[in-house]
Amino acid sequence: MNGRVLVVDDEADIVDVLCFALESAGYETRATGRGDDALAISAEWHPDLVILDIGLPGLSGLEVCPRLTEAGVPVLVLSSHDRDDEVVEGLEVGAEDYVTKPFNHKELLLRVGKIIRRTRANAAEELVTAGDITVDLRRREVRVGGQEVHLTPTEFGIVALLARNPGQPVEVETLLREVWGTAEWTNGDEMVKVNIRRLRKKIEPDPQHPRYLLNRWGQGYLLADRPSAGQ
Image 1 (cartoon, rainbow, N blue to C red):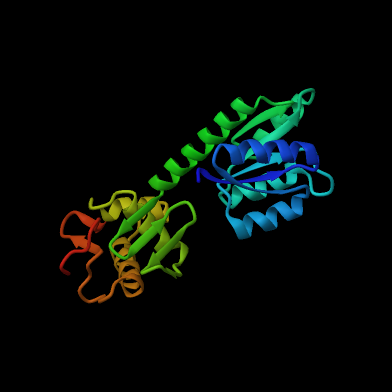
Image 2: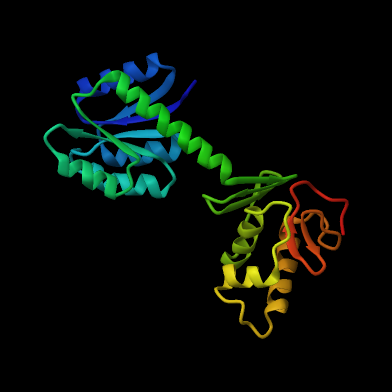
């Protein structure tokens, strides 16, 4: 299967054509003609892409699109050939690309494939794994052994910065500047230490002998790209 595509259009003929073309190309599809249903299906089914008609009745495509993209779902908008303003509005609210009706099947499939490949590549770059710890930078989630760990915004900011530099020490001054907004803190070292201690209690099997969140004397802190024997 090449991926999951949710088709959202209130014209049954368009839906049938789109679903047939997508399924023939190896995609799994679902379809609806309502914007509110699209949001519900997306939340439950987690499609790789939503093909979204702008001119939906009720909750319009322009209202649905930003809510999908905020949830991390890429959108390709459908627009009538004589409505360039719809295309511009769709792109402004977060759509990745667009096609106009009537559309060329081959061109549509090329655009669908390109968006899904790009999204997957970006997602791979935003997912950092160190042993049992997974940091999802896009969703702002940290999981240990598959279980989500609830972090404060500051704690996640520290983990995210370290995850973007796996295995590389990050200086305390850099942590203060990037997470707290300034390195000019009188007790900055202690602030970082307190948050590191809290983080270790949440993500380390043995906080007294950390294997992931390590300190390199004189260099800073790092997220080990593989678990160490413990400090």
